[in-house]
Image: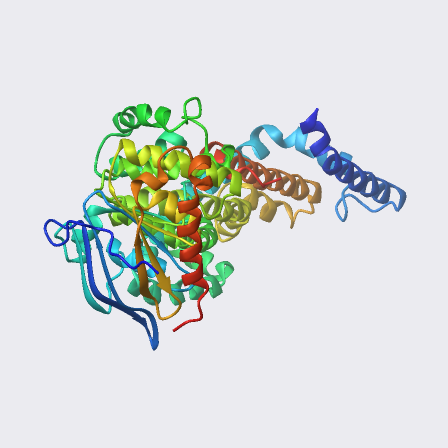
Length: 264
Length: 253
């Protein structure tokens, strides 16, 4: 089994740095001693069984919650409010505001920073078009399909202009066809606008398609079992081409075998 | 056509009730001062509209609208305060519930002693009846915002005020309107209580004047007008809600 830490540029100017991070809720230990490192503009995918503390980990990186022990550094920031300023977070549910149309939802972060409503809408309009939302700018969320809602949600996250994107099973609530489309689309979007990304998923394929590193978490209490580097060459081309590659399926199989191994 | 089909059942029930009423009052030969027939009530309404009923209905309408507006402002402000502070909630909520146990019928004359035969005591009575359902529903509505959405707001640089304004307040609207609908239906009763305690005009005043003179059909005419006011208030609130929260209409029949 190949065990490698995917980032070559350790130490100097790290994007994300987690050291011995633990989280306890009462007497339950949710996350136990996690060490992680993601270079700037790196993409880390975390896979693990449900309830292994993946989401808890994201919430802590984000600054929405503080770890019980250990340190988290996001582009040099260590306190929760500072981390919150550098991280955008996208949970599994799209959580759009039902009373705001597409542009209104996408422009939320700008308005929160004091940009006037009309100006904020003008600013996000061209992005909405690039996100395949042209013609739907003034539709309410309930008039959109699940895939479109998720794209609006992602647009809203990007518009916040944070250096770090934390995606918590962003496509988990979608059917497999839409999910495949959006994975393909997100890869393009991230190549266009590179950010430091941590993606949490229980879908190994998705982790390999979107991550440059894949960390496998063990079940409760959550810790990182292994980290795999994903060679960019492996995921070049369209989603269908990638999925056919034998090296890709071999790596997927290796990761699945780690996930299926009885808890140590 | 759709509107017609929707109101048809109501119209049918009202027509049936009216027919039974009319038939009963005529066939059994009950005198009008005990149980007036519908046609005598409407005749009274037509006769006494000018001068008596019109000005009484107007007086009561003003009391209802002013009292309702007062209740709305106080209730929504209070709800926002209760929502933002747990201490305020713990301190004030029991008092709010207690205030509903105070018999309005007893308070109304006391208010008249304090404020005289002015509009003020009626306004206070209407507001007292109206504000409770508004406060309770608005507080519930403010608390109904999705907690995960509020966390998203924090990552989108939204402070407490931004979250209140852009998430919690809009989320509270449908619930607040439920409270307003209840309040609008109760408001006319409040005005009548206020007028019973001492007044010089209004539908309640008219009823209390007409009853001892056995002008029963005038009493019923006043009741009909009061009922119409309550229904109009309810419909008006519903119409405003449709304009304010078009996004909440789906899934509602």
